[in-house]
Amino acid sequence: MLNINLQTPKDVRLSIAARAKAQRLALNISQKELAECSGVSLGSVKRFETGGLVSLSALLEIALALGRLEDFGHLFAAPEKPASLFTPEPKKRLRSGRRKI
Image (cartoon, rainbow, N blue to C red):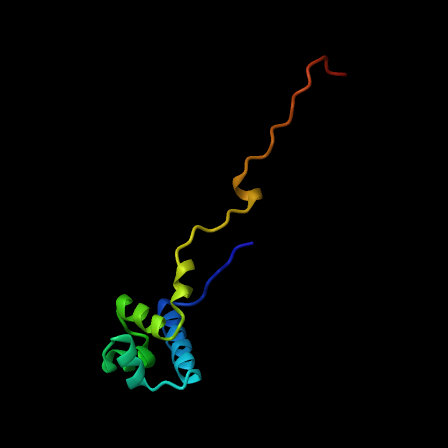
């Protein structure tokens, strides 16, 4: 079955930002505290949470500070290939002999 993803990069960016903000709030951490413990500027934290705009390095630092760095381990992992699509079908064995007419 085909998996059609209708999300745009902007949708994904905003979704990640919203989940990071929810994680920060669940940990009862202010934006300023997150900036201090991650080493990311307060302005970058605010820009990330409102528009999802942040450098990859800053995103990884924020994820580390929020205890979610391990989530990036699967980002570009090799997908599992379904056997039916990538394994050749076994060839049928031809029988020798005369054909019946």
